[in-house]
Structure formats: C-alpha cells, structure tokens
Length: 71
Image (tube, rainbow, N blue to C red):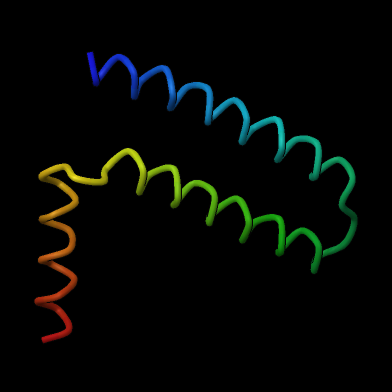
C-alpha cells in the first residue's frame, strides 16, 4: 500500500513541478533568469527524490558511500 501511495504522490509532484517549470520558463527571459530557474528545478527534484528515498536501504547506502569518501 505504501508503494502505491508513493507512486501516486510522485506522479502528482512531477506534474506539479512540470507545470511550475512550464509557467516560469515561458515568463523568464535571459541567461541569468534561466540559470536561476534551472537551479530551482534541480533543488525541487532533489527534494522530491529525498522524500521518496528517505528511510530506504538505498539512501542508507548512499549516505555511507558519501561519508566514506570524506573519511
């Protein structure tokens, strides 16, 4: 049941992100504004990915790999 819930939530979040990006990209002109939009989209996508992977085995492996690379 949890997998179905996350699948539906991911679909809705993806549609929301696409609509936001489509709206802002049609209103934004210039390289600086476009770069800021790109950064905002990456941050949004990273946050959604964090929410999906939070508490899973994959996220624990990623954290261990990052910590070991800095040690």
